[in-house]
Image (cartoon, rainbow, N blue to C red; front, side, top):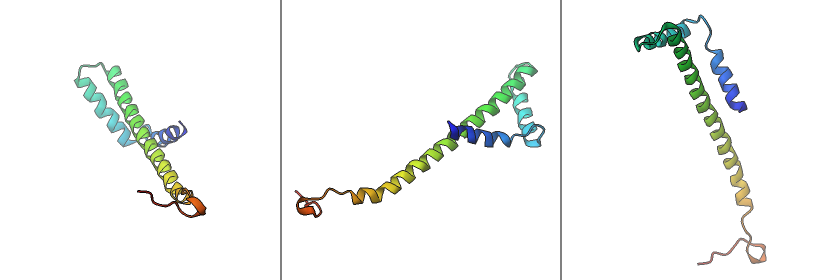
Length: 99
């Protein structure tokens, strides 16, 4: 969706090639996969896949939070409308309580 694409672009823009934090994370993950017996090229690709999966999960979480806020706003704005649309009883006044 558009929200996911926007969040993904924002998150991915923080991953700069050559940035110390990015290089350190990729290196750590690559060494981890090397320790599991993968060859260097595969270990590097798997490290990038883990980072991509992390970005995807964060993107989905941010999109969910956005949708939650939108739904909450719609519900909040509909409360006055619900109060105005109460069913009127006979004679145009408020409905009588029936027990």
